[in-house]
Amino acid sequence: MLSTIREHKAGFATITHAAGISSTGDEDLDRLLPFDEPYHIPATTAKAVELARRRGGRIIAVGTTVVRALEAAATENGHLRCGDGVAKGRIGPTTRLRVVDAILSGTHEPGTSHYELLRAFLEDSTLERATAELTARGYRTHEFGDSVLIL
Image 1 (cartoon, one colour):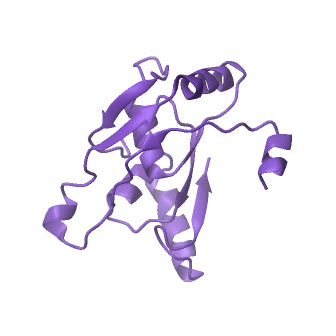
Image 2 (tube, one colour):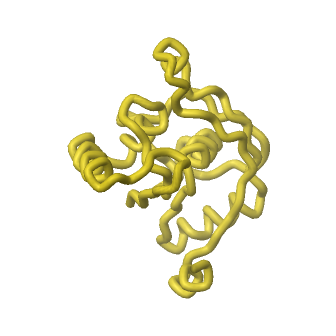
C-alpha cells in the first residue's frame, strides 16, 4: 500500500506526540477534553510540509492528535514551526485550519472532542450524513478498526 501511495507522489513525514482520549463516559470530565498533548515536530517534517505546500500538495494528518499538534505549531500565516510544544484547547467548527488540509482518522461518536475536531473539516450536515451512514453499515468507532478519509 505504501508503494502505491508513493507512486501517486505522496510523501510521509513523522512527528512524536502524546495521544489523548476523546471520551471517558463521564459528562463532567468529557467537557474538559481534550487534555494538553505534548508533541515534537522534527525540522525535516516542517521542511517536508513547506515543500509540499509550495508544490501545491495537501497535508493529510493521520489522526486527530496529529491535527492538534500541527495546528498548535502553525504560525498565523500557516508555516509549521519545528521543535517541542504542547497542543492545548479544542479544534472545532469555528477553527481556521492553517496547516492541515485533510484527515485520516478513526470514526468518532457525536459529542466527543474528536468528533468536534472533525467538524473543522466538514459542514455539520455532511458529517451528520456520514455518521448516519457509518452507523447504518455497522462501522466501529474510534480506535476499534474503522477509519475515514476526510478531504
